[in-house]
Structures are given as structure tokens and as C-alpha cells.
Image (cartoon, rainbow, N blue to C red; front, side, top):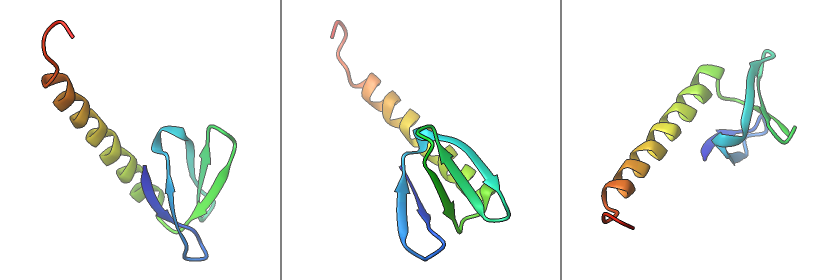
Length: 73
């Protein structure tokens, strides 16, 4: 999940795994795989950085969990 800000200033948390496209139109438009669209104040590069950080965090958690699972489980 990544935090973003709508144009009206309200905060929104988006599931990064559902992001299909991120466009500058000139505002940043995030389109989800569900077809839902959000215009946010963050720049495209900032949203991409948030998604990358989220994916790295998910990968780190997966590795930590995998390393703590006993053999044969």
C-alpha cells in the first residue's frame, strides 16, 4: 500500500499491486487494474519511488518469513 494525496488535499492509500499506469496529464493520474482512476498531487517519479520501496519491502518480508520456516513445513 502506498500513501498519496488527492488534489483536494485528502489522503488516500492505494494498493500498489493494482496500479496499471501512472501518467502526467499534467497532473498525476493513477489508473488501477479495476479501471478506477485517481488524480494525485505527487509527481510520477515520486509515485514510482513509493511503489519500488513497497515492492522491496514486500520482498524483504518474504525473505524473512521464508528464512524462519522450518524445513519440511
